[in-house]
Image 1 (cartoon, rainbow, N blue to C red):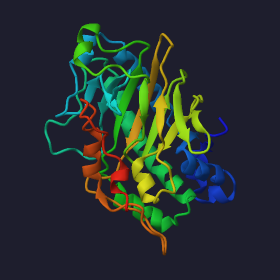
Image 2 (image 1 turned 120 degrees about the horizontal axis):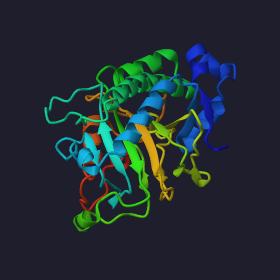
Image 3 (image 1 turned 180 degrees about the vertical axis):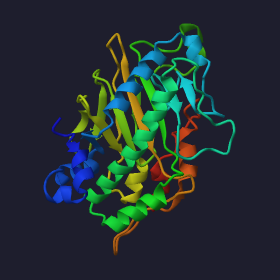
Image 4 (image 1 turned 90 degrees about the horizontal axis):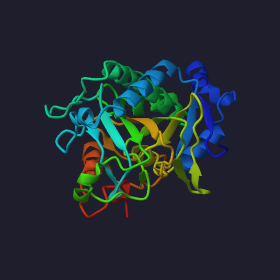
Length: 330
């Protein structure tokens, strides 16, 4: 646990950046985590009710018969809904997912909408309330991180306005990692073979991810200093990890958190629920530079980047998905 700091969000909500000066928040530990492995834990976040309800909804959904889940199956045209054969780094993960949106940017493409199941009855209300609450929570957490990194208040306001606003493209998902292959045996010959991890190593493409995990464990982050380290469950805490976009914005000062989930052996499986805080659809991503600082990346379109990151979720295209390294300045 010593490598993953615990941060009190209520202290920031109460005092703002002054919470760092008063030592209510350990600024050094937060910055070190953002620079080394990109992970910290958030407590006193004020979303306990939403967390309880979305976990209950997720458990009920994944416990339903397969036919009810595949009735809201997602595809390449509409990436929102249920899926059980996702690839990461060209290897199939041992998990089931339900991807959804309930706010932020609404696509002009009528095919792209959340495929809500008819059951459970409490499913859509719980997920919608979660999405709304975590949008506000992600904004506050982002402001806290930017303040901890030393940005003045006006720069934080400008960054949030230019990068996010009402048209943010944030998304969320429910993950279930069963102890066995989720794809029926009769269908496995037609899909990529199961890999050696429940979830293979990767970074998240957006600016920041807020993750709920149950008490099963299995999540690991890659530390520059210590290699793979556990991100252990902590009752009532939310896991926060830095994404690709914040690494670019900070010109590599922050580290997009490389993470994975090791194979799950618990018979009941593992539940996790990430909220991906992502820029607005027309955002241009480029480093914020101090005087005399040399940019590590050229400017690029968020829309272009996120499209490139999801193209290999459905089939092995024979090459790695797009990464921020593609935009590195030589």
